[in-house]
Length: 263
Image 1 (tube, rainbow, N blue to C red):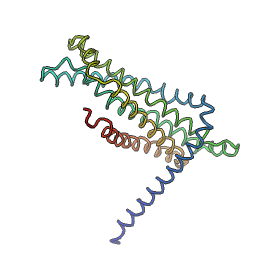
Image 2: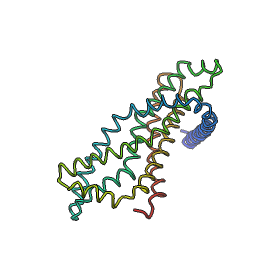
Image 3: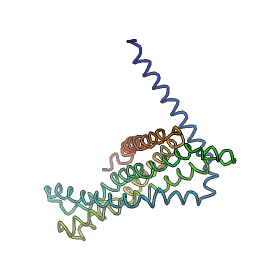
Image 4: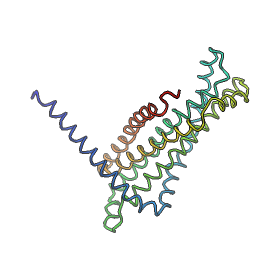
C-alpha cells in the first residue's frame, strides 16, 4: 500500500470541498442578481410560500403542541423542588422563544419543505425542464430557484412564531387544567419575567438566519443535483443532513452573541 495514499485522498477531498464552496458562493451571487427579476413577479414567490409554509402547518402545529406539553411537565417537576412551580409559564416561554421554537421549526422546515424544494428542482433538471427554459430564453434561476429561495426566507420566521405560540398553549394546557396552577399566575409571571422585545426579536432574527441557510442549501442542492433518480435522492438527503448541521452550528454562534450576559 502506498503510504502517501491517505494524504492523497485527503487532499483530493479537500480540493473538491473548496471547489464546491466556491461554486456555491458564485451560485449565491448569481441568485441574488436574478432575485430582482423574480421579485417583480411576486405571485411566483407567494405560490411557493403556500407550498413551503401552508403545507407545513400541520407538522409544525402538532410538534409545537407536544413540545410545549412536554416542557410544561418537565419544567414543573424541576421547579417544584425549589418551590417555584408557578414559574413554569416563564420557563416554557423562554425556552421556546429563545431556543426551541426557532431551532425545531427550522429542523422541521428543512425536513419537509427543504427536501421538497431540492427534489422539485432536481427532478426538473433530470427531465430537461431547466434546459428547455434556457432554450426559450427564460432564466431558470430567476423563474424556478429564486421564488423558492425567497419563499423559504419569508416563511421561516412565520412558522417559528406559530411554533412558539402553539408551544406556549401546550404548556398552558398542562400547567393550568392538568397540574392546577392558577391561570393568572401562569400568564402574570410570564409577562413579568420574559422580555418580549428582547427574546422575541432575537428569536425572529435566529429563525430568519435559519431560513436563509436552509432555503439556499435546498435550492443549491437541487440545482447541482446529478440528473438521475439516484442523484436527486442523494441531493435530497444532503439537504436534510447539511441543513440540520448548519442550523445547530448557527444556533450556537447566534446564541453566544445574542444572549451572552443576558441570561
